[in-house]
Length: 144
Image 1 (cartoon, helix red, strand yellow):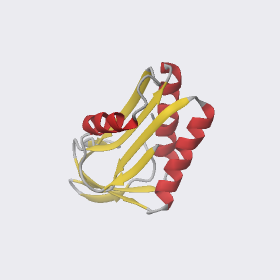
Image 2: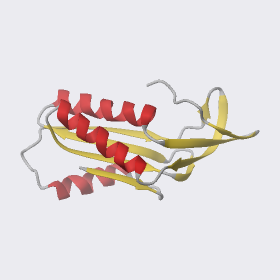
Image 3: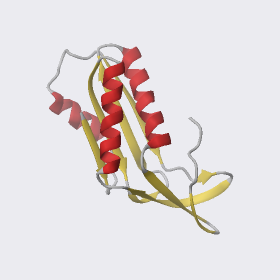
Image 4: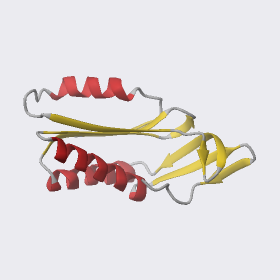
């Protein structure tokens, strides 16, 4: 399992490829499910031009590791990769990557969604959007 908070832009597809090459678990998985979340240019009916994401170092990683372990207790998983950006983020930039490897697709899909939903609703991240008319803190996440 790998959980990492990143301050620099990342290429989710290269991250998956690189991590999978390091896994050395060839033949142990038959399925891989992934989710990539990107910065969009709108929220709550307003145009968003940028975003600043903050986190609580140590606490955030611990929370993400805990939810990955919980997913591993619910489903038979081979491995999990979670990357999340913090800092200044531009429209179109990848923000989050959740990738799950399992022997079967159902476990991979279900665990990936489980991790992502918890991350969006419970993980200690704070978002401040830059709008055309100023800045605002995001009080709630959008629904799935």
